[in-house]
Length: 154
Image (cartoon, helix red, strand yellow):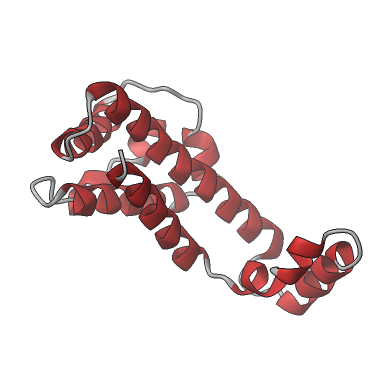
């Protein structure tokens, strides 16, 4: 089931592109595939499937990382960390969507958050607006940039 879930991932990825472009394309396509099914990220997480699609995606990620000049140990860790980032992000995104949905009045969430943080959690209270107003798409893209910036410093 996990292998079938990601069958579409490689369809839009140009593996011959620059490594960072390949890695971003793969991460976006994996996110899209996981979000395409209810609880897709939870279904995929922890399966360690060795199906054709899983192995193809893993090999493409490793190839891009090796092309960046990373040694095999660092490339392997980076491959897992990229997948973990996408999985964790999607689990949170799907959980939020299940809880709040697209039709929900966000003022309820905003009031609950402010009430829960105002007195005891000053940093959360100070960052309430970016937390509540940020889109998942924007947050995902910033996370990818941060991940790739970290790899570039290796």
